[in-house]
Length: 230
Ligand code: DC
Image (cartoon, rainbow, N blue to C red; front, side):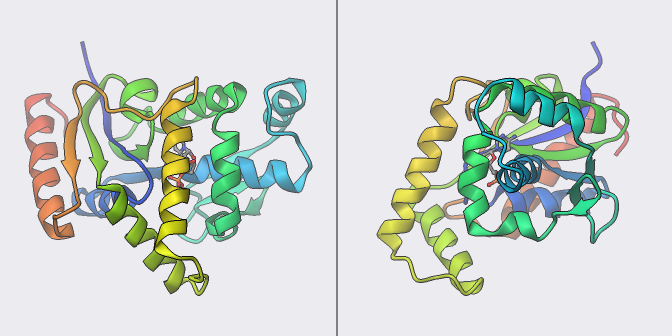
């Protein structure tokens, strides 16, 4: 059986998986695909157009009617109906909306096909919550990246401070992180969980370069073992 040429990176928010996935793709010279950005774009646009983020015909019609673009250029990572959403979707308010829209089965089904189509012909690093379990269970290489709640909350607080919106306390951020973990791990469709064949990477006490070195080595030996050219 031939395996998908996908390097799947899943894990909770704040685990450092985005930074790792981006750097890993850069190091290997392959495409980087951020699936969280897709959920964020759909959530943002539903909110703008007053589409209720619940299962039903309204959201299905919305999904049938839109043109979702991914990776047009470095400035246009993601957009819907020609509108570039690359920066807009990073706002704090969109994180909550994305968590809500990600629970709608029609949305997950739509993005499942979109993601499979996008990665069908190329080697890529795809980052998300359900890539190794649902989207590409046959990915040739899988990682589950995590870190303790405390560390992830500290990282999130630092990000908020850097963005100039850091007036929350560590306790408040920790509550938010736990709430998001809870909804990501306990939703009915495609919950966040480690695939049985995914390597666990705990970044709590590791430097980025250390993690990258470990992951690059694993990818290269798996690619070699499976006859995949990077
Ligand atoms: O990784 P992120 O914070 O950009 O993700 C935004 C939201 O989308 C988050 O609540 C989890 C959800 N998500 C998901 O359910 N499945 C994915 N493959 C990626 C993200």
